[in-house]
Amino acid sequence: MGASTCTDESKAIYVADLALMKDEAVSMHTPSPTSDNQTLVLTTTNKTSQDDRLISDDMGIDVVQILVGAEKKVFTIHKDLLLATGDAFVKAFDPKKNTKGRITMSHKSPEVVKLFIEFIYTRHVPAVTSLMSESSKSIRIRNLCQLYVFAEELDLQPIIRNQIFDKIQDGFLLIGKLPDASLISSIYRNTPVASHLRKFVAACLVYQVRSSINFEMDFIIELFKTNEDIMKDFLAMVHYFIPDQDPRIRNYERRQSYIECYNQSENTEISSVV
Image (cartoon, rainbow, N blue to C red; front, side, top):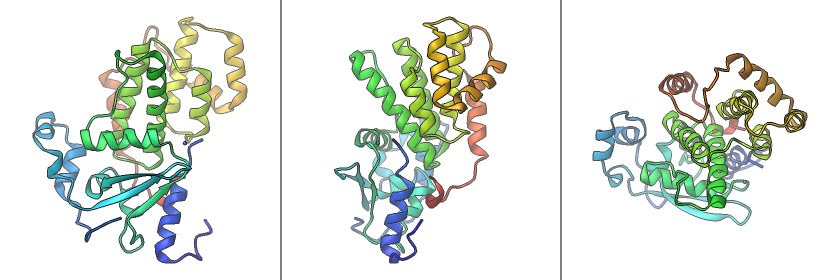
């Protein structure tokens, strides 16, 4: 990517920056090795075991910084917690290449990164709630979609992506709406062909048409014109459509296949995430 002339230190930071730039949004001690406890925090399926652990048991003492957005808003986070989310951050903060313990996400939204960090420290993805104003609900859903794109780009742990996906479904169900044209187009601009978020909004589109929910043919035609992949996914989802099956409603069978799909994925190098 043109980083071959950089020093080892600047190259690591430069590559990390490029790998984290796709949306249309210092270590103070010797790094400690990743422990089994970190893996437990994010991957356990035993709710009791997870709840019994304190976040302080896994955070370690080292901290790193993420500079986000055009104004480079600084987020300081415990290194062990961040690295436990996926190999992309492990590689980005390799002490042999990145001695400053800092990466830049110039084109990411601070609000989205804030949600990500909130998840890391609370073990829960922030949800859309009934107490929010209507505008706040819409903003939260869009931020959750951006957060999912962020997690998908960096190939973060499957459990993280699954939890974000669940909150997106729950959010749309709570507000009683389906993804609008603006959001659908944005998702298709910022995701790869195989993205599960694409499949979700395509399924929502099919559900909207087949259920005659605020359906307008001109709306569909114009949407298809913006990206031919939308039409392809729409037609594919028509084949699998089951009457009265609302894609916003979670069900065990779909989620199991979703998790299985991710478990088959390979580790992603941070330099190849884009």
